[in-house]
Length: 153
Image 1 (cartoon, helix red, strand yellow):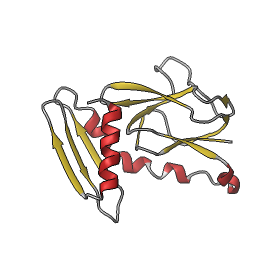
Image 2: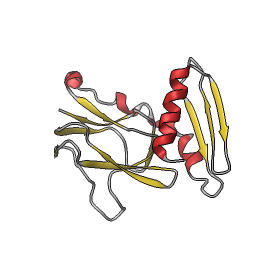
Image 3: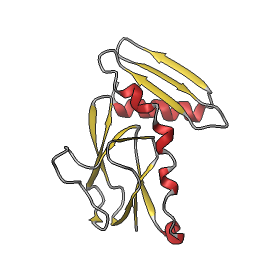
Image 4: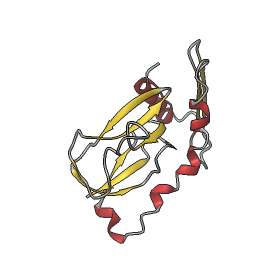
């Protein structure tokens, strides 16, 4: 199952209002459970690749990060959000420079980061053009679907 298909499935489950869903095939196992009073918890596991399951569990720890911008005019900024769950990377490798830095001008369609999901590295492109004001996520940390990654003006 591709990352986009998983994301579509998660969107469908979220809209359905179900509180618990378990899906298991020969290739993977997905368990989605939510409590109306807490954030959604997602766990994904594949028989040969056990890394994605632990990456999803610490996600709530990373959730407070978007609240860190203390600037009052933050409402004028637009956030570039994660289109999927996975591990956020600012560059294509440990020895390569980041795709974008705070202060850089980004163009719509420009690669701004990578999100690894189920051993697939997905290049994430800017949905809008503007100046990058703040990076909201640390390199090599888990992110949730729709979590703000960067602020642009």
